[in-house]
Length: 552
Ligand code: ATP
Ligand code: MG
Image: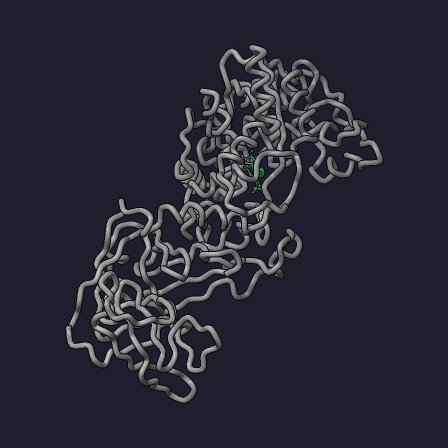
């Protein structure tokens, strides 16, 4: 999807967003007086991995529409699959939702409702609308039919209510092994919608659950659980992604047949896809488990934790979600749009400073003043951020790429016998180049004492302005620069490991001015270089968040 990246105030997108089809629907429901308890939404992650930026779209939508209408949102852990779930993920999900700037009214778990769910399944059995089936998983799959052929009725479909109730109780009591029996809805094995061909509602799993321990050995399936939890929590709009559209008839069937007294509407919207990455917890888990990345919070990951560690801000993610909007059209959004939102936010908020990524030593041959404290604003357009001290001395580092032995025409940086200004400092001229073989290892320069920034009376016309640090006071740091994690815009589940970009991280030994290391803030613009963020795990390590311009 091509979204124009001109600087359009994001409120324009917000206006457009406020009229997306879900918000229009909610407006109508409010107007028609259908919502006695107001707008109630839920964000229902399965705690089987870290949240990614696709989840952020759902979070912004669910929490956003509730907040806009004075309603409330549940954070509900969909924890019905004990084998894959972990308390670690429960904690990380809460942290990430908070970090994105949202507050839930209630924190719940599908497992809070295991008793009620068991009761509703019993209701279905009593009404002859569900039965215990003793086919194996494989047999059930084989007999389900295809898109063009109907399925076959299970030989256990006509068990009596009494027999079904007895078997279900004994399943619960732990009398059977995993897979021996399941509970299935009795709907229609010839339905055009395969989800309606007697779907499994309950299965046996002798697995300890992260919250309920060994209390249960039967666990409800997603399609049975989700709608009932929505009903019990009084969810006014159950917003989910498009792949659940085909499950909606089952959602409605369960609510209508299990004697649930409230029927929430399910409304589907498209998933967020992002170019050059994958967006499924299952695939992201493989990258972590198989060591292709350093963890769920590797700065190359599209996880909230990875984006945070890279230096992406919550405001940028919220802005991104507002700009992509909510539709029913599946697509992959360009990474450039996220980068754009990040720059837009950091442009306003990040302190400026100087960092040299590939240092070239500069010796000022006529410098005799020891260390001189210069100073500069933390942000030229935002005086509120104050100023910082910048030590200057006779030995400096500049960026290797700011010097050319044989400069092209209109070169705006340093070259033999040419002058540049050192930002907030003095004008220098390169008098002598020290080489080691082909490599330039040092520049011997002179500085002009009367050219100090702000009080320049030299009348000199330097080529340009370059950034620098004072060699002795600068802090040696590791700088991690990232490329896309995948080398193709649309990696797929089948081949994503082959599509990994083998060079997605470059580590440089650089130097930054001491005030940056001393300050408590984490986000900085290194002038002329890009936005960088202090790494949360490693001292004196900076992650490059984004370049200053698209494609830079
Ligand atoms: P994954 O395949 O990454 O595990 P999921 O849909 O299984 O995703 P859940 O934890 O079940 O993940 O998702 C919680 C909520 O987030 C669901 O309502 C789901 O629809 C929504 N969601 C997940 N991925 C996306 C996405 N890429 N875009 C928008 N919403 C998403
Ligand atoms: Mg899932």
